[in-house]
Length: 382
Image 1 (spheres, rainbow, N blue to C red):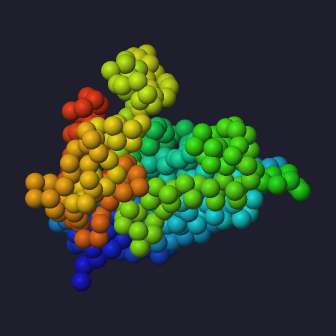
Image 2: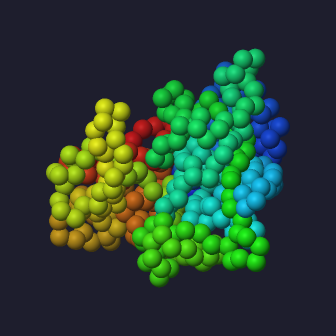
C-alpha cells in the first residue's frame, strides 16, 4: 500500500506517493535521489512534514523521507562551538540538546516542528532569532553538479538568506519543481558556551518574550528559562505539536508577515504594527506588517470556518451558507491564533486551502495587501 503524505505531515492532509523511500542513512538518501533523478522521476524530499501541503491526489513520483539523525561537536575555539546536525534530526530535539549542553544560540527557536535540514531552507525564525544568525555552512547534494550530482558545502553567504527565504527555497519556487536543486544533508551551527563556572544565558531580543520573562528587552536570561518560556508561548498559540489538540494540526504560521513599501503603511488604520525592513533594490523604504493583525482586523477571528464560531461585530461569517462551516467545519483558523489554518480532524488539503483562500482574499479586499503563504504547496495551488 502506498504511503500517504497525510500520515507524515503536521497538518495531516495529502494523498499517496507513487513511490516512497525512507532513508535512514545519508547514503540511502543519496542513492534514492540519484535513482529518481536518473529515471527522470518527479522527486519530493520530506523532512518533518511541518511546512508542506500536498495535493489530495498525492504525488505522482518518488518521495524520499530523510530519517537519519545525529549531532556532533566539530570543534571548540574559546567560547565558540561548531556543531553539526544531521538533516533528518528533529529540530526541537536538537534545540533541547544545545540547552542541555549549555550552548546558546537557538534556544528561542524551541518548539518549531520539522527537521534540522529544513531550517535553512525556510530560514526559520521566532522571537527575535532565526537560523541565519548561527548557521555557518551546510552540506548538500547538488543535483545540478556535473556528472549527475555531487556533495557540496554552501556557506551562509552563499545561501542568500531573506525573510523565511533562501537560495535553496528559491530554487524550488522559481524552478517550478517540487524539490530544490540542493538536498540538505547536514547543517553546521556556531553556538556559544558560557565561561567556566558561569550560568549559560542568552539575550532576549523580542518584546513579547521579554514581557513573559519579566525582563527588559535586550537583557539576558538563562537558556533553560528562555526555552521553557518560548515553549509555553508557542503552546498557548497552538504552535507546539500535540496529537490531542486540533489547533496544532497545521503548518504553523500559514502566512508570512508582508514586507511592503513604507507608503503602504499610511493606508492602514492607526495602530497597525509596522517594523522597519530595510530598502528595496531601487531604494524604496520597506516595512514589515503583521499578518496576524491584518487577518484579525479584516474580520477573520479565531476559529473562522467552524460552525460554532460566532463572528464578532464586523467579522466575516465563516459558518457558510448552511451553517456547517465554510469547509464543512473540517478546517478552520486556529481557535488560539489567527495565523494558523488547522485540520479539525478529517480535513482534505482542499478544505485547508478553502479557509486560506478566504482569508487571503479578505485581507486583500479590506487593506489591499497581498498575503503570501509560508508552506510549500505541492500538486495544487492557493
